[in-house]
Image: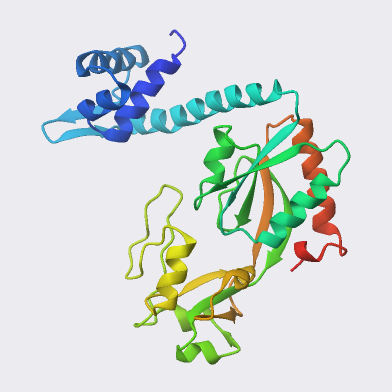
Length: 293
């Protein structure tokens, strides 16, 4: 069998995402008949059925789901190779660091300052992103390193250095009866009829079912808590951005959260290795208070 072509994989992934040939063809900027022929040719070459087609629409077969998962990895790796090759040709050594806009600013500032003080260290460009986007940015090459959180982020395929471990807190409207407590348990805040827990997007962009509002960014969350419409469980460092209308109460039984510096396990970048060594020193050093619990 001849090797699969990247063009074929892009065609198939687009159809698998849309589950509709006309919409997929529109996204790809082509007519539907040649797209349908390309998918049929791919199925013949592989000797499997990738898509079930009937009057109701299109659905992935079991084999199709496997190719969909594998093809996304291949396409992201190809894009990453191109981006990192272009960056390597730059006369200035530079790294792109992806992080959520809500990242602890003292932690980020400490990391950037320590890197700037290292002789010969690469310049760091900070790329702010949404919830759970860091992994995609590392895989497709938009970022070289990222700040991520264990246990919330999926770290498979990445090497990491721990930077900060902290407790979690419940963020409540200041006027709520529980806001006067010195500590709470997760059970105390998990089923409040008047304050449903805010729902964050999962890694695929969908939300768990539940009564709480779907959260898209930190500003929205802050406003909803202040209005008494929801509560949230966040890292203790979130106290730095609280309004007067908010109160943070420690959750004594919630798992601790560790912020890590992450990069692709296959990376051979000397600049990434240098930043990782520096992060390791900072994470272990008692002389770096912003990076300790």
